[in-house]
Length: 366
Ligand SMILES: [Zn+2]
Image (cartoon, rainbow, N blue to C red; front, side):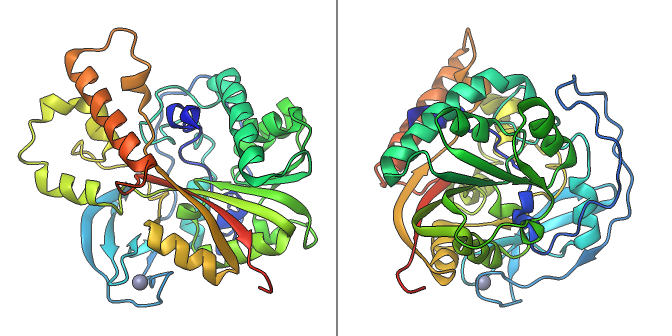
């Protein structure tokens, strides 16, 4: 799926119900504004920020070492990343439940930098581009899973563009989305069946779906193990779950950047690439990504949730500011070459991924 590389789509979905588990419902009932409207100059919304110490979601240990200090910030509260002996990286102390709820209740969630700098345009303004992109993605999923035109479920369905593309290909679709403006956009503008809230609150009987997708969702959740178990329960025999997660922050690339950031001239990379790599010197926004998986951690969680891993795909999102530039500079062309080389190496499995995609099947007897 070369296209998938180009347009990672929403690189930062809401936890959809995913998060669901462990996430409280949004704390306010603000009237959502039209998310496709141009983003307003933004004054950060004030809400109480509380934190709690958390354990590793993979092995249960609470003896993690410092990994990156001051990675995220809400107002005056800064958040550090730690790394467990098992390899898992996570935010600790983490925002508590009500604080996470307030973060996702932000009506600007999908219109302000939710995509970590990979894309430069408003998610909703990319509707036509994304519908075309997702048509190719759904076709590729059909080919690789052997499934077609059944019942399809997306956890964290955002504005519904993936679901709409699937519906146009003959699938019966259903979404779950936690962000109120995104869910309401998909219902109002596309007429999609989207449950607004958390996965565990959604009224779906077991064995409801043939194909399920959790694209950039698990890293937002407080209990990915339970999310995966719930998704397995929702799958019919012979069904498949596709999980996509960023893995850059928990990768040798990020660790090398930590060491090299003082040696590589910042001008060579440019401000947008530095921001994308999370080394622009400023903070990286709210702690939406509370978990940073690597392939091993994802595999462990998936297998424990009763899945077998049928396929692993490693890749890196190709940043829009480099790959959509009309007249790229020399530095940009150099960076393109680097990204393409890394992408090629990842796809053949020779290099660790900055993003991983797993095709999972319910394990027999699980
Ligand atoms: Zn651990």
